[in-house]
Structure formats: structure tokens, C-alpha cells
Length: 211
Image (cartoon, rainbow, N blue to C red):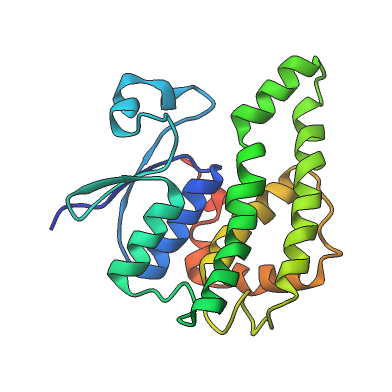
């Protein structure tokens, strides 16, 4: 069988999501670090894997896949992870919950975007201010959307789903940048549940930081 290889960066939210999904699927993989701080994502070698110069990139089943949500969808469909409800209406709502983070909060809080914000602002605390400006309102909206589901105990049911996979990396970023989220009761309840799940714990950035 072809070895599964994940090209990732330990603090990348998108990579974090894929690590969780791979763990939920029980897939052993080799991790190849791509250091975003050193600019390795712009190397010819990595651009050959992903012309966008992003992480993650995943080699699996003889394929090379990019974009975290597309990768997770592939794993869900080929490994039967059940990450979304079967009912079409609930499925759409659960996907919207996940996208509220992965499509709306994450892109504007990408490290390269935040670094540019610091550059044009000329402020040393520019990144922190930028992150706080966008993460807090996004997480408040997520909390409201999450309130339409019953946490039992995950975002949308009794098992981890796509929304949980997207949530935990964003929670990590919120806490990293000093964003207040402890008042978001539903969100923090899910956080506590996911934190003790092995698939999430083993994907946690500090557990995946290269030595």
C-alpha cells in the first residue's frame, strides 16, 4: 500500500484539521514539516505539491490532495467517517457551522494576512490586534449558530463531526492570541469534550511540533 504522507505545519489550522480527520479515520501517516516561518511553503519543491503554496498537502491512495476541507471530505467519503448528518437539512446546517470558521474566520486570520496587516500598520502588536478584531466576532456568531443544535456532547451530535474538526484549531488560535471565548458556553462545552478525545489530542499543535 502507498504510504500516506502529510505535508504540514504544526501550527497551521488547516493542517490541524486534517490531522484530526486522519486520526479519526485511524490512518497512519508520515508527517513532513513545511516550515511556514522559514518560508518553505514557497520553495519550488513545495509549490510542485501545491501551486498555492499552502499546507496541508496529502498523499494518499495514489493521489495528491490539497485544501483541508476537500481532503476531509475525501476521507469522510472513502472511510465512512460520518462527519455530517444524513438528513439534507441538518447536513446543510452542520456544513454552514463548519464553514463559519473555515471559510469566514480562518482566511482573514491566516498568518500571511495578519503579517501584512502588521506591515502596513507599522505596529509591533499589529498581528495580535488583527486577530482579536476578527476572531472574537466570528466566534460569537459561531456560538449563536451552535445554539441551534443540542450539544450531545459534540457540536451536532454524539460523535465528532466536521464542525468539531474546524472548531478546535480556531479555539487554539483564539487562546494563542488572547481572544476571550470563555463566555461562549456551548463552544467551550464542545471544546472540553473534544480535548479529551484521542484523535483531537494527538493532533494538537504542541503534540505535533517538530523536535
